[in-house]
Length: 246
Image 1 (cartoon, rainbow, N blue to C red):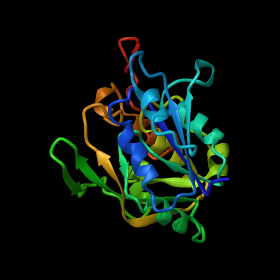
Image 2 (cartoon, helix red, strand yellow; image 1 turned 90 degrees about the vertical axis):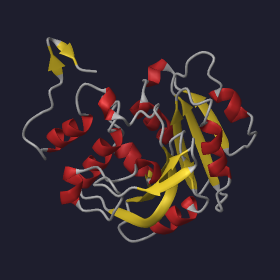
Image 3 (cartoon, rainbow, N blue to C red; image 1 turned 180 degrees about the vertical axis):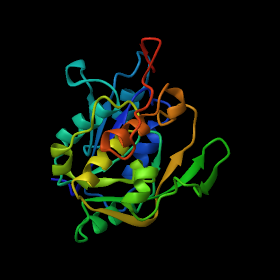
Image 4 (cartoon, rainbow, N blue to C red; image 1 turned 30 degrees about the vertical axis):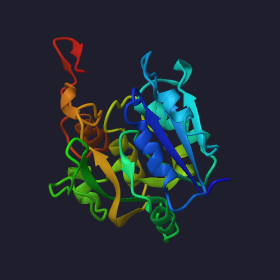
């Protein structure tokens, strides 16, 4: 059994998933498994070909069948259930880990009360090679529930947690984005503890295909999380003229 399972959902990432995989292979801690869940990539996408080209027995590739759902939350749940380790690390298919990520993560997970660990990120602009820190309200920092109720400052791509939490609190498949905010808000509600690693664990790729851009959607999934938790009193406007806002 590997010391840590890394779960990476992907869709139509044949043009960039190789970098994410290589950043896992380059980890200084080598006792890992990488579970890649292909979430209905389009015909012609090269993700499967790229993944299998690595020929590494620690890398496991699965296509998400319709009977197990569709979209990011279903892909995360499916990968988490396939994980064999006590610990699960989140990984996105368009980002890069620093090679010390798993070492730092496992060390932090052994701290008392560390149910979830997360770290800082660097913003990476691949077209120019520029790397910079985030300095706005979303910057990663030590967990404070009051602040978290206002802003999701946990960088999901740096997170890891005990597998039992993924079993007891699966991702809500309603959420097309902000599934991480909903997941961690439920853990916070039930008193689970968050541990911040005060160093960058990954390079977040800034590009136009990122599914985290909520501006693409007609309402705020993040606001829905806050309403569901009772952190705000007014629900988001999810319908307009009889139609669900997408």
